[in-house]
View 1: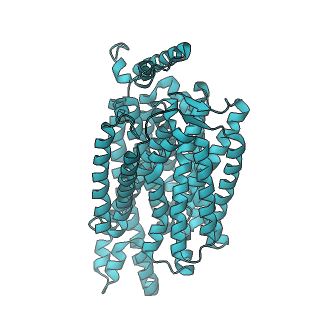
View 2 (view 1 turned 120 degrees about the vertical axis):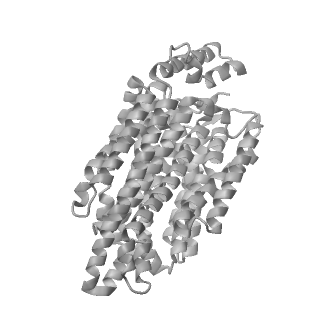
View 3 (view 1 turned 90 degrees about the vertical axis):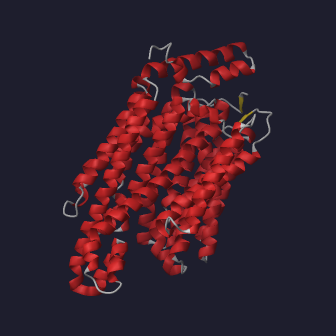
Length: 547
């Protein structure tokens, strides 16, 4: 099972490939949050309800997350370039249609279609990189990809905020359309096609079950904070997703050619990388949500100024993501994971302890800087641990697994941290809310947005209510940050226990390289020899490495 590549790219060609893939990636990631800042305009211009606005945002994410694994496998089998070109074409068409939408229904349909296109793009961008770059350059290229993956959401928020402040909401689509068109042109002209030669049947049942499991779980997690965790749509998504996930596992374990070989999770490097990456994106996505709310609601920032407040984090994450592979090769994954996640925990604790309305933005800067360092050190090694644990011909599945872990982590983090913030705010403001007449107290208790409305209605007498609401929001912020810091501490301990030591990791790397050299030297397609390459697990080398 060796991959077929049209041409072996030289160094200049590889740079063009990397630029094309990162451009496509940023278009996809930026679109996740791009319309968030335009919700008020959409509600006014299209008459959208809050539920419709939520589906407009979540429809893209659910379609993206649900289809990652099946489409990653399709790219491996039938050609990564073909899937990428098709995805970029669909993504472009959907965004153009969205910019011309006259009703919220049309806009929602365009977002779901764009999510399908994004699912065809995102895993393939990484698998094209890992299958095009030689071993000595691959980790650095993955680091650049990971940096843009982490910073793309921030760049999307900033760009969309500038557009919304100066133009109308359809112009929010200008950036993804432009980047998508550039990426499509560069893909057609610069990206070689690669595919896996595999005579086995495509796992249709596994693909359907994985899409149902991931899509339903992400739906339930997204709906919980808004609709309520006991609502039918939330429970249906969570329970249905869990049932589909169990069915997926049972089906995959019985297949000769599964969509995802679940036995790879015996590899401690892959397992620890997946867990750590999930945790990083859970905290990062949850932080983005509550940080923007903190800057706007508690400090009174505009959407643009609040989005710009995230830029220092992106400015640190991107270069660190490129340097992280070099550090990882020197000190090992375990040290990188433990150091990075510990820094994340410290950053969250600093933001919990120092944030205040009186201190303003600068009260969170120390924590934000330390957190960005931790994310930058952890994100690329996590991605490399996943993609490096699967053979080249399965890089589409490896990339899709990486992206699925990211999306599930983002959904969990957004729901968890957002719910914790809401609970902390509600508890802190309850005494003030109890003194207000009629329904005003309940409105204030539901969220700081309601408190701002009540305060405005009461005129000068409402100033103390707004002040109390902002202080309560900071209390809720601190509560959510402390819990997140605790989760990060547990994750750091888990990384120390689960991740192979440097000695074991390097022994595994040497063994894998020796096995691959043997395959290349003999030119054999012997299955046993191929499996020797694929199944090298650091855990199995513990004794020989002296760990």
